[in-house]
Image 1: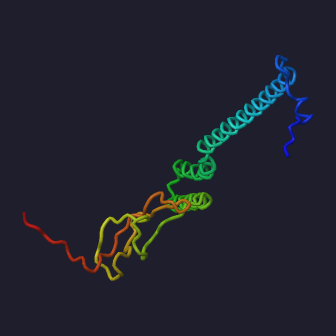
Image 2: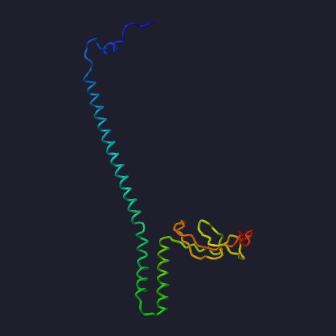
Length: 184
């Protein structure tokens, strides 16, 4: 059986033809939505400004880090410069005193390098490493092939990154004989 009588709640909510819509309710809802939009827009603009300020501060910090990264190392080198200037100004002519001053200056420089984590590459007797060594020549020697025979110039690392490769001579591989002469 179907109930053909209209539900009492439904009939009270139905608008009569020609009756004005509930404009006050719609206006209140619109005002609330606009207020919420304004609030969210303000929050968005604040978050955007905070993000931009953080990005700008990070960029400034990065620029300062690049600009002044060498400052500590330069401060470590100042005593070395002072010692070299004192040695250059020395007019006593005493060779022993000059050598002692140079040795002291070298110790100061090595200490500054240690504090800056600059390490020496001195690979005599080690296996040749093309990432850390630059071979100037190969020579016959009584060592294993591709072993560093002598170091012509020390290399340097900073934090395992090569500043300058060591210049070395390397033991010839067994298959390499004397260079062949070609007549042209």
